[in-house]
Length: 348
Image (cartoon, rainbow, N blue to C red; front, side, top):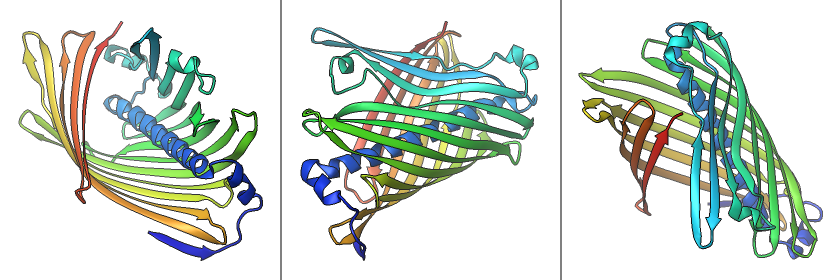
């Protein structure tokens, strides 16, 4: 849907569009900012989940949740390795864990292939976070996280574009009952964009300020040996651009409702944990951009249903095999997407 409003175009915008593909530039800016927000909320959500088992004794734990993806190339063969540092203090050490704890999380990519491309950076990340939280009581934990994102990669045919994002997020998790919790996160980020062409001409840069929030509620149930958990989540974001993207704004809202279940099966070859889940989600975004003589507003709505199934096979205390299958379908019947992931984890 497109709606027009009267407004004057920003000064210099027409001249910039003659020299560069401004549509591609603005699309890159929006995508990088949205990816950074999603990753920051995902990291904070994972951190809060890792503290829940510690709430009964009223403790906390310092943790590393960082994953480093290393990509190398040998001739025509590509090699990819994932270094996963996710860990949490062992249960027997909880009595020595203070209420205040530091942590770090996120994922970064170190690519030899990108290092050989002058237009790309060998190191890139959609989000790394460093934070600290405090266990106020067995029911309440509050914290703060600082997030970083960086990327430099080709854009269009002869342009290089880089993104730098710094974010701050306040978060908290509250148990309103023995099996019911509420997660809250409120954050803000500052984005900086710059680029240049192969001719050495600077591309129009820009900056953006983004506000985002998340609210998630969940309740657990038990049916014999089956553990069920229902949840609902809502997120909202608002972003305003400046510089070459002056006049551009973005607003987005998303809602999720879902149910997950898992059980444990002890075998002679280790513990197997089958799991499955079903989720409905709906999203709505509104994008405002200056036109030649009028502001143009674009509205987008989407909804989908996602089914997931998989298992964790703990071969021993140090080795785990994980397999996940997912199937998502647009409720309007416009398309389906299938994913299959397998990961082997060896802890040292």
